[in-house]
Amino acid sequence: MEAITLYELNSLVKETLELSLPDTYWVQAELSEVRVNNGHCYVEFVQKDCRGNGLVAKARGNIWRNVYSILKPTFERATGQLFTAGIKVLVEVNVTFHELYGYALNVLDIDPSYTLGDMARKRQEILRQLQEEGVLDLNKELEMPLLLKRIAVISSATAAGYGDFSNQLANNQVGFYFHTELFPAIMQGDGVEQSILQALDSIYERESEFDVVVIIRGGGATSDLTGFDTYPLAAAVAQFPLPIITGIGHERDDTVLDMVSHTRVKTPTAAAEYLIGRMQDAADLLVDLSQRLNQGAAYLLTSHKERLLRLQARIPTHAMRRVAEGKLYLTNLRHHILQGAILQVERQMQCLPKLQPLVLQATAQIEKRRFQLKLMEQKVTDASPDKLLARGYSITLKNGKVVKNAAKLQSGDEIVTRLKHGETISIVK
Image (tube, rainbow, N blue to C red; front, side, top):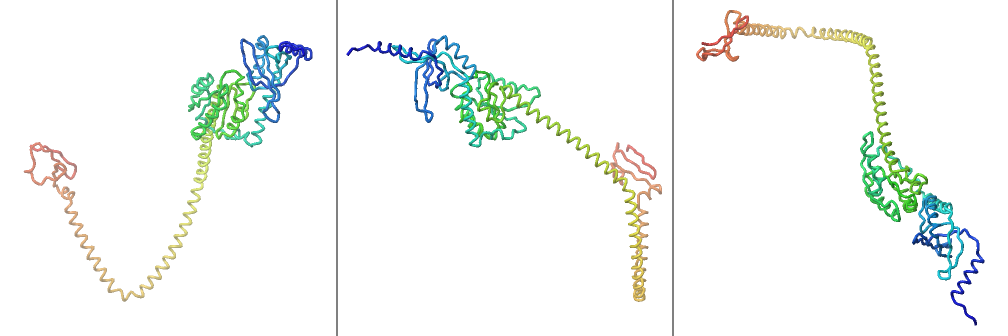
């Protein structure tokens, strides 16, 4: 039996493959590994079982430097996705076999639209699952408070977008005051999902202290957006009890996070402008209510004034009617009183012979008391100071008190002498 060397066998395999597969082929596969060395990119293509995650095929791939330097930026610019493990791609390859390194696929081109379609399909799957669970629009259905003053911010503390957001709020032209608190999070890379979920948990524990949550990410590569397209993060945002505003600095496409949040704006600065605008709307509403209140008060005052004038015009007629009614009432009352008095007098006249001695006795007592009162009145009148002054007497006062003894006066004392007409002031010498 004639033997051949391994190299000879591999050379035969290489020759056979090159003769059997001379063309290029478009292959659908998933990147399970991506390594770059000296400008060359070495990947591993896999295909998984559609009923599970088991592998049904695997191949090594090479993207040489001259191709990779063009392919990578073109792909990432078109898809907004890093050329990294875990994504599905459609690549043009030719089949090679090396005696030392074995079977491999040389990548010549890539179709970004295929990857974009797969990314869109994943987004739609997440949205469809949220829809089936009945939570897709829960955050959108929350009522945005009229005054957005207490703001929980999820962002990187060192991000330029966070600085722009804070400066925009602090230096707004109207002078509105906002209280913001930062809940730091990783906004790009593999830690985005877990980091934002932790920040949301921290805010949830203090839910009553905030009016709204703002998730912002300024600048950076659009290829870092994959972290915002995960089911756990989308479900948490959709079911969060506070309205969530997203401004993650990506104008072209909406992430799943944008689709489930209450309000989506393009950039952190736009998020700040939205909050200022909401505050301005509230201020305008207060001004409008104030104006309407003033107008309403003026209308009420005018209406009541007109009503008072109408009532005032009716007062004379009403008063005259009431006076006439009163006179008639008094006339009738007097008539009834007179009739009653006459009847009473007639009854008393019948008893008069029996009462006459008592009446005479009472009359005598009354006359006696009247005489005594006149005598007392005369005595009081004669004893009054005015009566004495009228006779030519005078009264001397010191410090408002009557002086009865001249010996109690001292040199220099001021005394007042009161006469019938006027008074004089003297100094004792």
